[in-house]
Image 1 (cartoon, rainbow, N blue to C red):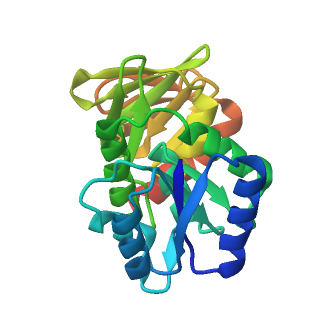
Image 2: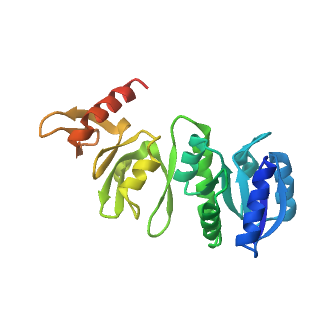
Image 3: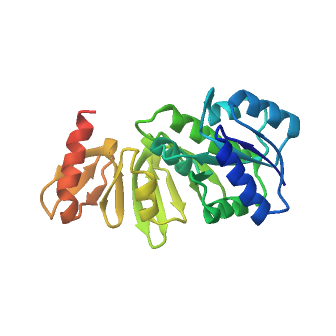
Length: 250
């Protein structure tokens, strides 16, 4: 694999080079750059298989660099500090990243994933999701859901609720659509914490925008706009009611 590193910090570029040389001698680092413009030139010239890309660069951000590339047929591993909005956007877009300072194990895991065959169409879906999620630092807009057969790009606003089914999660979408994903609801609780989705029960997450009202009887439950009744855990009741009130005034 031929690799390029685009990061404005020389020490980060050197750290990645040293780790790759030590752990992956078959990866050839053909070039490095410290800005969007310089990165664009070396990518077009060298046509890498793998790109390590910083999110924040002096003359723009990493995704602005990717938008300049006519066809992204290489694997991208994002390198970032603790910009929470960027990390959340990368996660829900099903893309890989490593945090600064660079950790050996974290880098190795990301590189091993990169060895898998790249599906161009699926990668474009991921970048589309990332582009939209990075446009707003307030709330995530899109999520990539991986089914047994393919990836689906889903607007968070279309998600009505999610329900746990053992180690799977069922997403119920507007229009009566249903998607089964082989990840736990606990994982999605973390991924979608900045999206308007909320865990209201051990087995249920709901989209606050799709709640009609809270019903006090029968221990307390949510009446969703499309008619579903969702139980609320007693220990989450205060948090849920506060979240509903806060959402009303957003």
